[in-house]
Image (cartoon, rainbow, N blue to C red; front, side):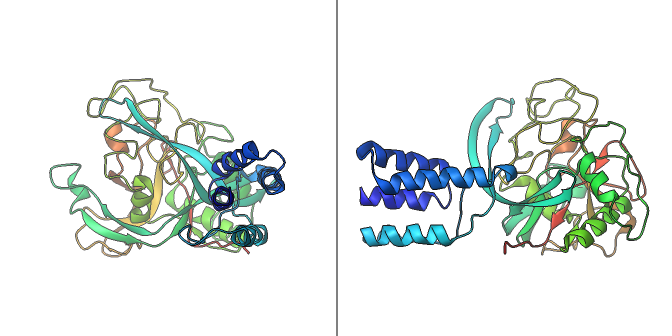
Length: 366
């Protein structure tokens, strides 16, 4: 019983649902156990306390090894540690994997950490913690397009990325903040809706948005680098899409009159949809494939020859009047929505297929 309590306490750090199940097992053996009753109340309190932020439970780094003897004293020590540790905001989501025919073959439940920026008037911006790591950007020879060569290894530092493409409500909230360098259109989008992605914004419009938000928040917001974008999109996968080997209209918004691999045709919606309408990837990011293209910070280069390997923006020896677009859009076929697909567009263009999402270099809880 002591070991079960210890495991339940450890689970409170990372998985409130598991913790609750373990404490219920304790209660099944002893219906009046005060520690179990207190723990379940604690879990419920944390959920209520952070329900407005989609937060589940406390999550702290480090834990006592279960290889060490588990005693009443060690259980009490861990309980006191949890009580003293401020809960970090997390959210739960599902990750879907499909095969080359578009058939769902796996559905995983995940939890990840995030931060919430209050933009005022009930509008918020959620940014997700992206762990650092290395990956291969681009496509191997014989796959993808020539501008995706040579595939090479890139190291990425931890950062935070918006869970969704910037919405029209978020856009208006930031546009109403003091101007930094340029004026912005309060309502630029063709497809209107508070929770639809903002579109018809140029690269420079998106940069102005980031500058206003940075000044307001007191922390740096910016466009992602191309390497950060692909790393975040893939979320540890090497398949053409983070969903797997193809796309279907059930998991992304694109022109589903066209297919990829052996995937099926589907509904072509002919417009944007509300952000978060489809499952997230393993990092908790939505709409990385389709809906609207997303601006990146980099200059356009015809291929990856001499590209940075540290994840930084490539802003030398390229075309500064053309900037990177990633992710595909509602009007494109699925081949344009691949994780590796890249496109260069004039920075001053405002199109109803182009939006953006922001990243934040660092944000720690007080």
